[in-house]
Image (cartoon, rainbow, N blue to C red; front, side):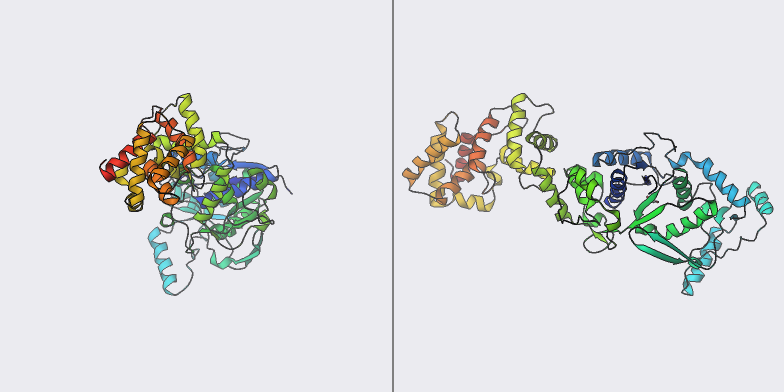
Length: 498
Ligand code: GLU
């Protein structure tokens, strides 16, 4: 195999969509697996829609996802510049050569004329194809008209009939009727190169060995192969990946939920989990394992086994994979992720004291269990920071309104009122006394105890909760944590007016 050189070539016209991120990832896996080179090329020739802000975001998001590149606009390399807007001279030079060789020509048809032609073809039920009207114009004359300021595009001269067949790594042998292609525009009337043209010049000059991209580019590949031929360049090998769709089989869009890498990173999806999930979008390892490390993915990935059918983006599966990766985080990593969210929620200060950090490390372990994404963890921590009898659910309140509920809460309040600080062992002794005094036992005893201390009917085990809430109540957080005695007092006052 030729030295592997692959590229991800995004247009900076929006945030990095997960469909494009999947393309970037497959290229990256293929490059790393083959000890090849991974290139980032920014395709910013659409001046109106390209923005530097999107490019900056894109670079950050690719970095966050762990798709490091070897050559790119920020890194340089032997085949730069890696931003198309800086390569315009090369595009023009090759276009002139094609014109001089009679392989391309100036076309003076106005947009209105082309529109009329297109509409006519559509009305007759035909595929609109450029008529080739300007093909026969003598080059010398055309050049003079252009020099005199007349607007023109440059088109590639393509065959009117025949079939083009090429091998696709994912889809096998593919054939296309050339009569349906029309002469593609290489240079637009404003002097900028078309996508199909710039991409061929760049892929050829950057010595790209494999082009791996979405199947929405298949028809472009046909045009590009014609261009390789006209330019006398060897074409790369092609692999067209199936599209990423929502569960309803339409292109994944905002309607389905988050769609950009940035949104997922903001939700606290782990980058490794998104990496893992995207690798499974249109490919699966033969042994059926789904939770895989980067290294395992690089070793096991097989481009030839990429799926030909649409890849369905399944949010639940992404969350499941995220949960599996969360489990594998260390205590410290869990605390670091939780810290980001808890600061956003205003629960934690900008800088934590040593004791606060230690508390967070202990609390983040049980509270990150079962969350789909880290943005859900602030809600979990509300058991500490947002104790509020007033906003108790109806179910929680019902627990306290039974005969036992009432007795247990009052007894608990009276006993805790006398305690300085309690731990779980102490609470066990206290609850033994309450049981004797009230005659309430089993869930009639434990449910009211839980609700009195947490104002919730489920959540952390009390033996985990009590030491954490007591220690937390000693620490100076922006939102103070109430200790057990205060909680029992507030619940008792709220429910029973005691
Ligand atoms: N800039 C193109 C896009 O974002 C690149 C397609 C290609 O890989 O050739 O769709």
